[in-house]
Image (cartoon, rainbow, N blue to C red; front, top):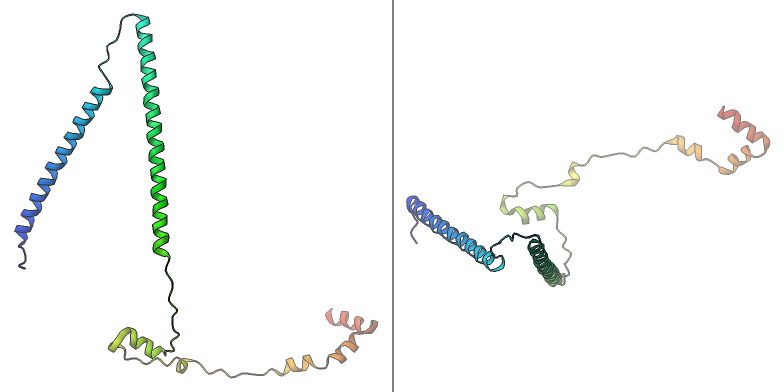
Length: 174
């Protein structure tokens, strides 16, 4: 298939936009006509009577019509709310159905860091990772002072037993 030139593409794009603009104008005109027709059916021209009693009668009639319209509006709102709730419930059901699947049991694979990087990066992987080579060597130093402090626990208890031991404890702390 041959590629389109940019001028041809721009020309087609402008034609599409003109057609869409015309369709939008028709749609708004239709909506306006529908609104006008509805208003003529449901709201006749208002003729104001001259006497007070006729005005009161007109007000009662308008109040009755307002009550009817409010009832219809309330019914519509409750239908919409019920439909929205049903839609939400169905969305949740669909989500639950999509989400229920058995997770496969994965096999344990023993793989070194080098093999893992090679599997991920492919042939680009050249550097060898020897993680243990980068670790510092640490020598353990055994402290002799701690061993002497532990010593024989019986001797320690005998020294602290009795009043003399208590006296020594307080003297050494002070």
